[in-house]
Image (cartoon, rainbow, N blue to C red; front, top):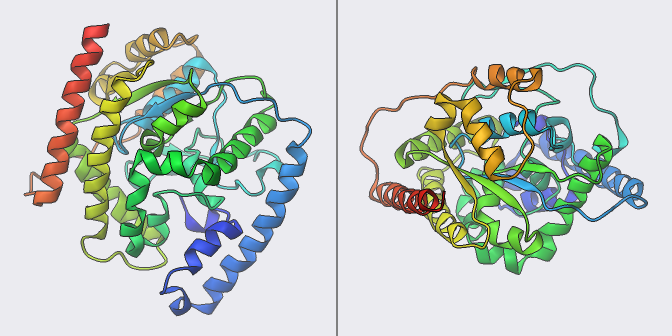
Amino acid sequence: MRRELLQVHPRLLAWLRSDAGWPALPLTLRARLAWQAAWGGWNSRLGQQALASESPALRDPVFVLGPWRSGSTAMHELLVAATGLPTPLTWQCMNATAFLLGRPPRNEALSARPMDGLPVGALSPQEDEFALLSLGGDSLYRAFWQPQRASELLPLLQAEHWQAHAADWLPLWETFLHGVLHTLKRVDEPLLLKSPNHSLRWVALRQRFPQARAVWMLREAEAVYRSNLKMWRQMATLHGLHAAPAGALEALLAAALQALALALLEAMVAPQPPVLVWQSRLRESPRETLQEVCAQLALPADTEGPAFQAALATVAQGRADRYEPTPLSAEAAAAVAALDSAQAEAWAVFSARR
């Protein structure tokens, strides 16, 4: 995400302005964000009017879940290519306030993601989380903009938050999803959605979509933590309005891994538990893994055609960094142990059911 490309809704601007450090930002920056938000609110209202005559009920989506940096992006790319299911695209997610008023870009200029080098373009499958962030809904990605407020986001790690505040975020999110299907002209099809943040909302999402299907990505927990620490620091440095205080992102990530461990265990006792996939397995045998996942999710799959071949070439360009085994803080070590334990327990349950 490039901050200058993410469109701003007045609700997001209101949250940014609620920080005590807002008045200290350059006047030109504050004015630009206010101007963008004014247009964002106006465009959003016009876009919703365009949807008013075409809003059939959303079909239960298919979700890609799991921690950030666990292989969920590669799984998303490959599932889209194999199944052909509609999914939010970058140009829609980054322009959630106005994409209904425009057309898809004609040129697909690719850029490498800073955390892993994976090529991303305007027509690439994208996290709908960026749309929710742009529209002012609760999102952990607010820490990319104001990392000094990371501790304020800790309630978003709890499943109870998403249930209690569903009226605040669910309509925003669903309106965006309706818009995605409208612009793709596929209003009667189930969406394929990917966001690690949905893992923390999974209880609320299952209540809204009882027949939703999901694949949950697994990865060795210490690699998850170290890779996330690198990513969140990069994003805060590149896009933050303020500097990240020492320890703020580390504390958020340790708490997030603890919450994800609990969310995974809760998901495995649900009536329709997710299909589990190890990142290492996806990297080693992507075609076979996708065939297995699609069979388990009862999804049609073409893993021989040109779309899948192109997706394989794309995900192969992403790198998997290795990290020096430096000591972890006690808080981080406890979170890593909790996630490893939860993944082992969940995998045992999943394997026994197969």
